[in-house]
Length: 501
Picture 1 (cartoon, rainbow, N blue to C red):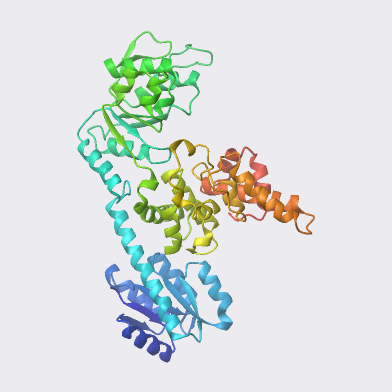
Picture 2 (tube, helix red, strand yellow):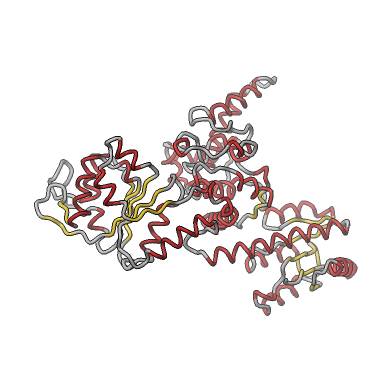
């Protein structure tokens, strides 16, 4: 373990901390001012730097706040504890908001100081383990046995061009698996083209897939290549294949059978040199029985089937995924990565995640924007996570219920944004957040207030906009489009409601 660095111009403080940490079996290294620390960092490699840095806030020859800023640039994951006299508490709080692990008021109780350093030490070691896990699995994260089976399957299919069907709930990462299959295949140098067949209107889907000739229909002023031609020599990923219209299934079957197709309005066949990977969250066997999916196409697609587990089936991966998404979100927003407490991680690990990995990713985006401090505590988690914590043992939700709830995978829910009354568990989209709003309104109406309309409207607008900004990584125009409001409107609301960012 690396030493704990202590920075203080007061020799008695350094002596007391050194002896107390030595009794705990922890090595230390002491400095009298920030210049010495920065000089040491410049000469040490990563393996010899500090495990934790404990620094005074006011010293001759430099400020602990300036040291914090400079150290964080070099070692962003290093826990820094700022020691301060009571008169400097405002500065300490500012430091806390700008990346300090915690502040320690002077004069301090020595056992409490050692306990705080121990917590910072544990946090530092957890971060190192998480970084090692992420470095070992850069493409897809997952230590759970179910995910290891998926990784092994990808490896076995690495030299094959066989058609693959990926099944799994919405938000479980089916496209990531498809991209991994492409990246590790003989077609890796070719294009990877993805299309969600459920997201494109039926009358446009045929043209999207197969292209069209000029004049094929009203508005077709030029010829256009479809996704099959765009994926030539590579991989075409057909997401939500179970929603493909029946007549287009016939055309897709023909392409898979003989490798040729016709553009819409075309008379010459086009050869398709494309590997097809399909995905669905639906039970295709059942759709075949219902007569809405062709049985021959099902067998043509279902050569190799990979089932991607839901996140609730791989709870041991929640911790590393959470830290990965918090780091990713911070990089996208250009802010300091936030840390998360063990208690908050434990609660997240018990949540059923109806929106799967995508929901966890969006929760992490939301926390990066909304959590008030650098350390995310359990109380900072979205209300639907906290409210469901007592209902976990009711068992996992059925696949069909995922689309009926209000998961963060489709953007932060209103109940999460409102942050005052927990959403009710297992309610549908038309009941969950509305019931929470009703409870909140009844509480306010039961007081002497006469501004309930304004209070709830401002809160609703403010946090709905913040949720949209979190989803779009702070891009206002994109957030306005998602909300269905104008660019000037969102700018005015941000100013009126004093929304940061």
